[in-house]
Length: 159
Image 1 (cartoon, rainbow, N blue to C red):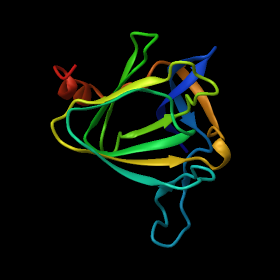
Image 2: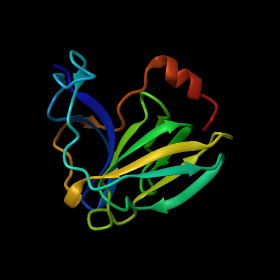
Image 3: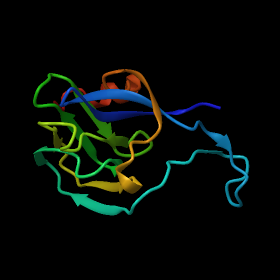
Image 4: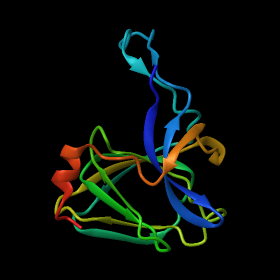
């Protein structure tokens, strides 16, 4: 079965970096009532969750991830940049809206910068991992996971 590929904000040598991760374990065919036959995967042990309503045209400034966490953008648009790099990641809300933030202060000196350039609210779920454990993964490559050509075209002009 395939894996879930996700952009991660990780840290290397004390600096935040973008990496494209394949989360492990891969998808399996669900045998759970309500999703029998669908593709499903476990995200590991999770600590809790918060639901955030982020105003349009908002800047969260430079910060570290408060915990190793999944961030699920249900709607809106996030633009993440690194203070020590020209690399960036665009994360649209919806089916492509998953990000792993693992650049906590203990591993990254400068963190990352997040802005929300859309005039509309962005709705996000922040879901820390239990015990701050980094999800099992394989690094596919440095840099954010690629966006589909259609999605990339729709984001042009927002930067």
